[in-house]
Image 1 (cartoon, rainbow, N blue to C red):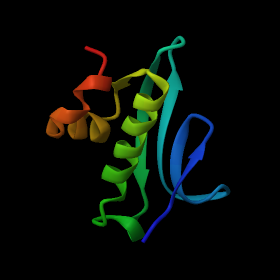
Image 2: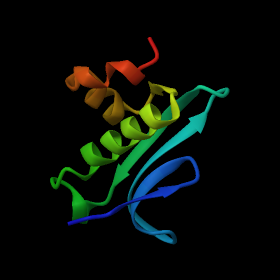
Image 3: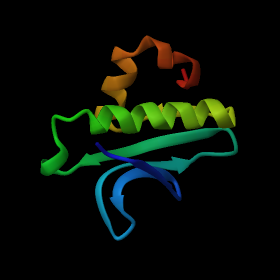
Image 4: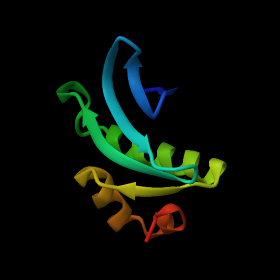
Length: 91
């Protein structure tokens, strides 16, 4: 099992100085963030870590009342698959 931790402008799995997986965003104004990359190490691939990171980011956006622009191809694919994320997607 893995624990998702919050970092400045993102969430990660692992340790601060050795992130095994990460989703990173860049703030764009006060109410929007741009997801620029999602990375999962080979050792965690196939375990749903990337999906869990996107889900955690969506929860974060809902808590903060912000919208997401998913420029990262993986994050974009998750938004395409999960229509229930549309409330935080900037259209």
